[in-house]
Image (tube, rainbow, N blue to C red; front, side, top):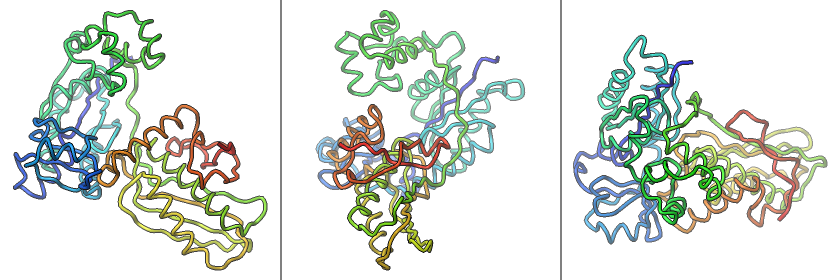
Length: 405
């Protein structure tokens, strides 16, 4: 088997770069993008703003204090999605295997291509083509695995490139902060610092079983990454256009309260699956099938989101407009479409810090204890049929769990 050759590409300050394409007067100025209310948070910021201590996910109120002379912009998810699609098409035309891990980040498997075309040269040409055709600056790292390539990209930013030769992965990582490793967030970093670990070199030298005792399996994964070891493959990219779920009742019903509760639970669980799959949707559809098998649906376009409160409200609003015949219902369904990659980050344009923290806490519980471990009160009475699979891996349509809280 050939040694893997993987390039990681990441658009530099993506949202900011797109805004500067539309308005050249923004060049070299500190830019902060996100929700503009006092309770909003920073979605992205320019390198000029970062020099003042501003960073993504920071409360907007604090960002205004740190950098009061910045240009503050409410994000435009549609605009960013269009540019992300342009970059994706360029990469898709240039290589046979790539993975789009977020709206502005890609892994490219170049294994074997060095026999026909130098991997470093090809990566540079893709970078230059992206810059020429879209105007967006992009950085890349090239190595034998995902982790080292991603870290190399971070070292190369902005608008740079870095190659780590086979056998030099451990030495390359050694002097860097453990914060450089993918998966080390604020909580994990604090845990590592409590162990006296600040640099990757220290993490490389401590016993592997100590990391297991401290962080369990994630600790082992982190220790392996620190050694420059990562066996994950590049996952072929396929853009999923929609996710949906529907429920056929054993007995036709006209209980509007329970119908609303069920639709709320369905909408909430689908929203969680969006976030779990790092997706956003821009269209909600509700379907009703009556006892006479006549079927009706209604849809509405919305700003890109994966937020429960927005999607549940729109689902119930569509149901109220659609359910006019007041006769027995046999089936109801919910579908989210016009999906794009991007993750919860793009909801920072509207959501407050408290709401984002709430979603993150709820999703942690769901990831650990199952999809139905926690849900809103108005969805707790929904009678359901089984456990739901992941709509992004081709599994069966969603069925909510029947466990109550």
